[in-house]
Image (cartoon, rainbow, N blue to C red; front, side, top):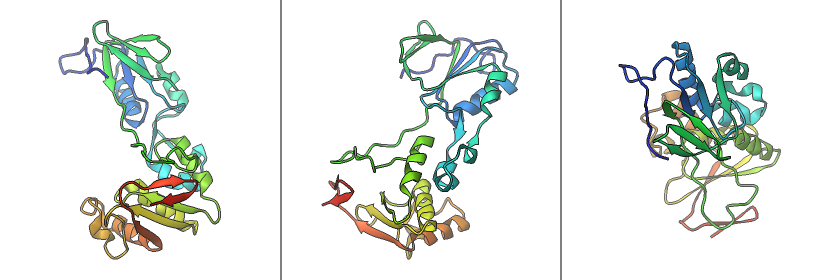
Length: 246
């Protein structure tokens, strides 16, 4: 996307009180931006564009309680859906911004419609990097970023399931999934290249997050590594059905 164009701002660098604001990205950051604008007295129109079908929500629950109980009551919404309507904020759900027209101050959507703006805020966040190898389109392969991803993974965590986590357990979401899997008495394998897997005897040291997370989280990381079978695999592994290929 093109860089932000801000054609109407106040002396402090923020949008003018009546400026039309468009927010691309309807995750937690986008929801908080809209919330801060409206609660801060911004009177102009606010439009939020996002490709998910839900209002803004916080993602941490997706790898925690939501995996045990995939009901929307487990989700921490930034604000209830009705709040946006009551606050005069337009939520365009399931839509994508495909082009920013900086000259005319408009965002073009995937249906070729255009939304005019005077102040544009980008809160698109990040995407899970897709796995690029043979069999990566298999239906049993799950990513974890959205509510639908977590619901899909939760359906796989049935009795007797065998879970494979690809990559070293240095990402909090990864070891939280392992922790939930152990709580359900499931078999868990961690596949990582080299010595990247987390073992019970060096979990505290192998993770680059070890100096950033607290002692309770470090103990949890060590705990969830017990019973997780670490497998070293070189680059170039593939999937066929539900089996790993060298």
